[in-house]
Length: 259
Image (tube, rainbow, N blue to C red):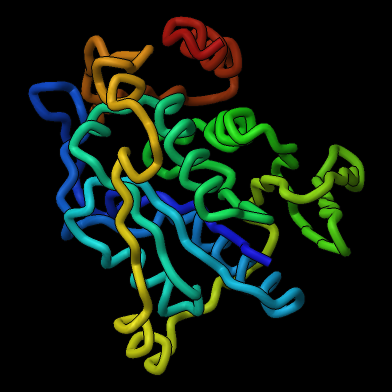
C-alpha cells in the first residue's frame, strides 16, 4: 500500500507577510512551515499505515530552497519524501499545481492519496478536486473518518445532522478535515535523528514528462491585479441609554455595508 500525503510549505503564521514587485508573496525559506492543516493529514496517513502496512510518502511542490518542513514530516514517521522543484514552476496557478502533483502521484504509483482541507496561505480548498480530475480517480472530500477495506475506501463526512458516508475503489484521493484527529504526533528525538537518513527525491518537470509551457506564470489563468493592505484603524461610537440604541446599531451596520 502506497499512501501519499500531499503537503504544502507555507509561510509561518507568526511572521509579517508582504508582496513583491510582481505581486507574489515574498517567501523566506527560513520562515516556511508545514501547512498547519497538513499536519492532521500526515497523522491520518501514519494511522492508516499502522493498520494497513506499506509506506507513507510525503509529496510537495516548491522551490527546493529548504527541505526542513519535509524533514519534520519524516521525523513524525513518514517513510520518504518527494519534492517536485523546477525553475519553470515559478508563478504556477492552482491548475498547473494540480497537473504537476497528478503527474508525480502517477509516477509514485499512489494507492491512497491524502490532502488537507485547505492551505493556510491561500485557503482555496480546490486543489484536491483538480488533482483527482487530472489523475482520473475518485475524490472523497472533507473526511472526518477514513476506513480502507480491501480495495475500497470509505469516509464519513460531517453533515448538518449526523454524518454521511461515501465509498470509492482504490486508487482514490481523500481530502481530510481538521476534525479527523485532534492531536498530530510530535516528532520524537529518535524520529528527528532517523529523519536525517530518510530519502527525499527531487524531481524536475522532465522527470514527470511535463512541458514547461503548461506551468509557470506564462500558463497561469489567474493573475493578481492589485492589493490593498487591510486597515487596522477602528472607529468607536458610544451610544448611552436604551432609547434609539438598537436603531443606531442597525444604521451603523448599513453605513459600513455590513448588512
